[in-house]
Length: 414
Image 1 (cartoon, rainbow, N blue to C red):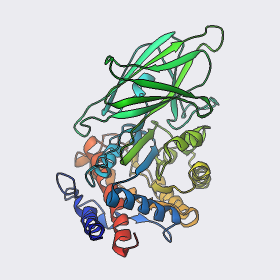
Image 2: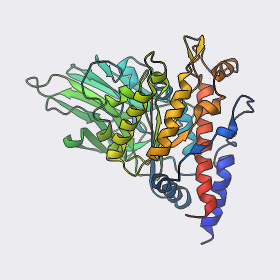
Image 3: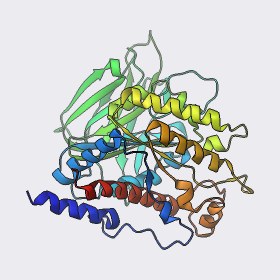
Image 4: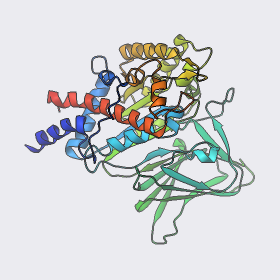
């Protein structure tokens, strides 16, 4: 068939020009960027990456299947600006691959910064537990955070907004929560013609709702049904699904989270399995590097443990590590641990068959955060970026992923 070579050629162009986007994905001319470093480092092209490229072939060349990308990290990820831009680009690579939103957490219920792109509106009094809380052994999962209420009846409404989000829809919603007999979760709609079916999957820790047509707003009710047993309800996140072919990019970030914090999430693997990841991006290290007691050996051991946990439920998933963004300590001194973090990740790439995207080098290396700040791309704390900086980071990561995929297309092995 001639159509496959033609689409392959177009996708090769997409690695440079992002076919399907309103304009080419080319970062603005920034002399401080090290674009020569903007690539994925992978040892001997592991089977997991070959499988990922085959999945991209099925989606981009044949228009079938779904691709699940999970991005895990700290505050760089929680705000969902870096991940948002990667999601926006992947879902616009070719027409018709914008499957849905995927995993979300209502951070404002935890009195924390919520991504702008979706708006949780809720009632009731809720308390939060984060994986950064020391010496707490309570169960946490994919979100790395949870919220709990003792109110007898509360509500949650999720809707979408923002220029990058003209409106997501879902016809399947899984509500992840603590399982006990004293509370029930129900979905509802002001539209009386909408039919919603409900199923409790206790062994996997969620209540599922199936809608008879796609909805762009999710409304939930949490109600106590028994006052004699457990008197609290704990919400751990939501997965917004559809059956459409396309890309889901799931965001899992907690402000201040380190490798140690993510290892505290006992149910991380179990809940990760629910989204069947094809690619897991781990951007964990900036908080480790700012720890006065930072140890490269401990950091490496923690990362190996996280990789093992992921592979226990997703053995075929490709894994991508991103090195730290450049940062300063108390705005005054360069954080020289960024070099040690990169060295650890390169060792992991050689021994664990994972890929590395050298964010640190692409930014411009040590001291580059000051240049980004002067360019209006970074915050004054010289740790976090502004939205324009995270958008640039997302575009650069997308270009590196697509360039690597382009190598696969150029071999003709698809």
